[in-house]
Image 1 (cartoon, rainbow, N blue to C red):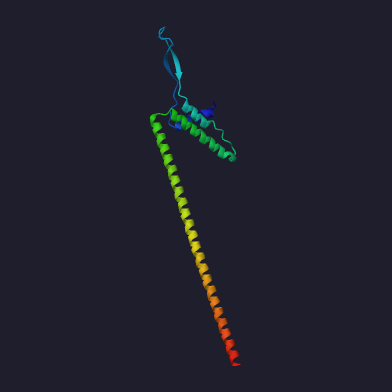
Image 2 (image 1 turned 30 degrees about the vertical axis):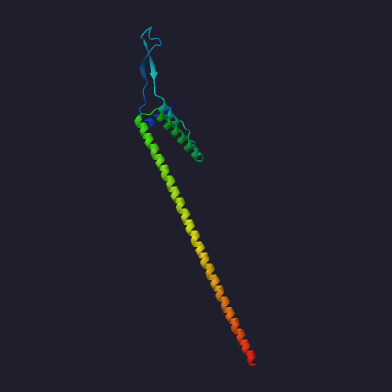
Length: 174
């Protein structure tokens, strides 16, 4: 691992407030305890957290802006993997914290769904109201046009009737 990668891992672990465990020596008895009681040292280290933070450090970030989405997807995947591994080896407090975060995420998703449903219902109601108003306007326009046409027809008939009466009167006089 390069110095930059080690520095990245250390800064990530410090940011997570995690102590890097030192290798410790535990006594281990030999396979047959009947022979001797000699112990041999065995080294133990806790790897998962360090391995997960390595995932975050080893992501190659491209210089071009066209790959920004791919980079973000890679970082998000590494974070998910890190959270999964932390959850496997987490202390009870961290598990409770992750459970609370999960509940908050679900609550936020429910709120988002409710807001979307409310917005859709409001949009549908507005569209229905607009359609009803347009239908009423069209009906009023049609009624007004029919009334005007009827008035024009009545006026034409009256004028024609008066004209016929005048012609008849003129014919009778002559």
